[in-house]
Image (cartoon, rainbow, N blue to C red):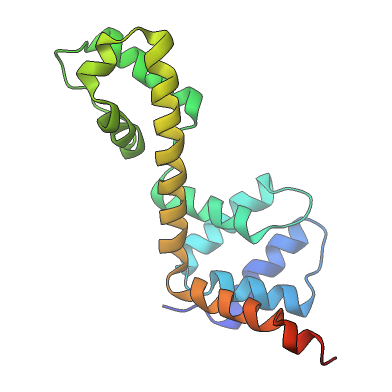
Length: 172
């Protein structure tokens, strides 16, 4: 369901007001286009979290990351993932099957192979895992963000392309 302009205005107004700012009409319009396909309930809760943690100037991408974490769960950072992998090596070993806290860790480990990982010295295995995990984490985060914004992202890109059309810029 698409949020109404009034609903997105309330969210955007609270986010900017929480940072002591007032959005320009063009900024509000861009925010509305970016968030209108979000579930209103999640959008409100994410706005409350974002007001507490956001930077000096509100960013729609940072806000969408907060929504993403609320809806899909936080993807562990590299150090948390590495700690979990080390614990699994010690607890489960190469004969067992570890249970991962997040699918991104499982996907990265699947690319390397659990038994192969366990049999390789940590100084060689862990950098390979961290590289694989960084790639998977980036892909998961990007996919979740695209899913959150729905088909709306192509509309935004088309508007930007029209706004910065070189032929249109030269006409005034």
